Length: 420
Ligand SMILES: [Zn+2]
Image (spheres, rainbow, N blue to C red):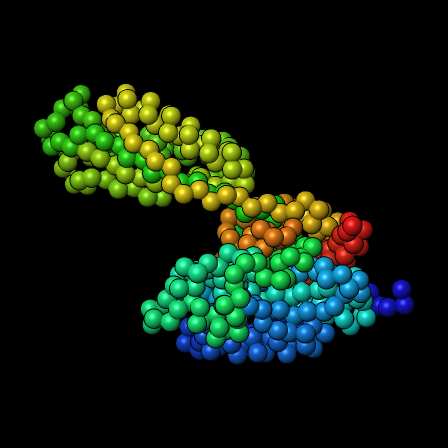
């Protein structure tokens, strides 16, 4: 215990985030598209920063830039953290970037204090988390877990280059992407810090969000058939107005979703009225109803109940109703033990925290297929993201990095004890 405690250097985090922001297309900040020259230059810079933090940088077969530091136990088990540094067009300086910089800083704090974990430590800059021109997103994290399929690798961008070629250009080895990568099997835990990309933490003045998981998304298309007719000559009593049925459904969804409580949302975001004329009684309406919650069962039940109630309404209005459940994306849950480590770290540092779900996808949700994961959110101004004005306070990012560092040390002890 002669070592000084590892300490997060907020100023260094700020400097690095500012430096990385300079790798942008000059005329549309902040744009650093995966597979582009600026992205490659930024990663060359990042690899040197990894080195300065005591991490040995190398690309894996999926084109992820991975910084590694060996643990004392030598059993190959690893703790990992990280995120991505690619951006959307006209994106921000924090989405993904904050997570990589926090992970890097945590590793450097350990290195400078002379503290070695029992587990190996891996810091990931995942390749192309944002939707790419090749049709896929979360390319590097998919590759890590063995879900970057030949069909995805065969995808092309408008210029005709395949994703396979692009991954190779980015430092990967696509021929080796036949299953989960070697690192996947040895991950004992993965932590990802990310800006919230929503307004909740800022509004509540809470610096840390502990992410319980990513929500399930259920969608159902509904078509209401009535009878079109002249808006002037069709008596009200004889109308079968499909839009009246649809509007009842929209209102019903709104009320029931509001009553469902926090963490549940439902939306009718798409509505097509036929024939859509000012002087025609609507003969048909097609709409898509979407519901999201961490509770997949609640999503399914909500869609079922919406259909049941809409059928009742349709009957009284003389309408026919067709409903079809579209794709459902399952929920991904954070690991309770990792969440507890994050919350324990917050408590020990006197940092307020709250649990929340993520309405957006992240690399951690791919990694969850092979290892326990958890995420922590830090506030971002006005909930704004994917925008040049995206902003997070460095103090919040640094607080998040401290929580991640502390949680890594806790998990290093706890998970070592759990090994057979
Ligand atoms: Zn992101």
